[in-house]
Amino acid sequence: MRVKIIYSLALAGLAIMLTSCATPKPPQAFHNTDNMELVVGSLEGRTCQMLQPTVSGREDSDKLLAKAMKLSQHQTAVVILENYAEPRIGEQFRDRGSLWFVCLRSLGYQHIVFLQGQGITDPEGLKILVEYD
Image 1 (cartoon, rainbow, N blue to C red):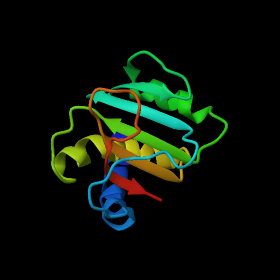
Image 2 (spheres, rainbow, N blue to C red):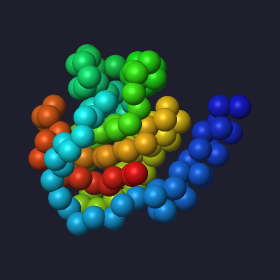
Image 3 (tube, helix red, strand yellow):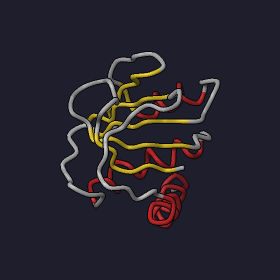
């Protein structure tokens, strides 16, 4: 019960943050200009894979976030949303990106970038969906 309340409050707060914190940009390709501490491939549902700093197998997002918490720095996180079909940020992003955003912010990540996946593990050149500073 308590988890549902916390989750509901987090989603309500997220709606406000998503509309006020995002850096609106025309579609552009991602180029690594700083050292990314964390790169995650969000595959389907809660299944994901750490791509940097070390590659992991497919795992539940809770396990990956527990690993991310132990990393020494929490500056930049990149989340690659695989099988993302919306031309702009919408319901699909809210369903998939909201929880990532809340969790990564709670771990202290200051710069979070969401990219549209294309089945590759290198984020260089992927389309930026949204970027939070």
